[in-house]
Length: 185
Image: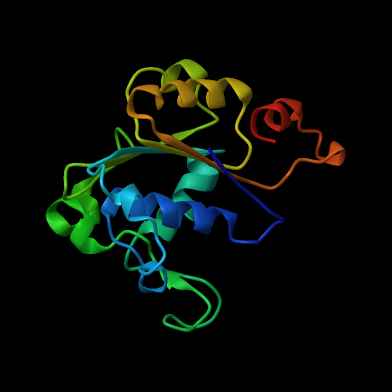
C-alpha cells in the first residue's frame, strides 16, 4: 500500500494518477526513466480501478481531464513548466481515440495492450465494488472504510497495489477516520 498525504493543492491526485498511468500504459515520463522501478512494468496489461468521491463532482471535472492527453493541467499557458498534458497518451488508448476507448456506460477506459482502468465512486454502494480482480486501485481522498476493504480484497489474487491520495482529516472536518490510521499508519 502507498499513502500520499498532503495539504490542499499539493499534487496528491496528480502524483497518484501519474503512477496509475505509468503502470497501466508502461510509459514512464522522461524525468523518471532512470529511477522508475522496472519490475512495476512487467505485469502488464493490468486492470486498474480509480475510486473518487463523486462521479459528477470529481470524475468528470477533475480526474478525466488529468488523464486525457489533449488537455492541459496546470497554471499558465499550455506547455509551460508548471503543468502537464493528460497522463494517458493517445498511443496507449484502444483504437488510439479516447471516445472509442472509453465506455460511459461502464466508466471504463480500455487500453491498447488489453488493460483497462475502471472508475467508481464513494457515492456507489460498497456492494457495487464487489467482484472482479485488479492489479492496482487508487483512492482519491479518504474512502469510506467499507469501500476500502472491498477494493483491497479485489487485489488479493494479483498481489496488487493500493494507493490512497488524501488530505489528512482533522477533527474540524467532521470526518471519522480513525480506521485509516490503524490501517495505514
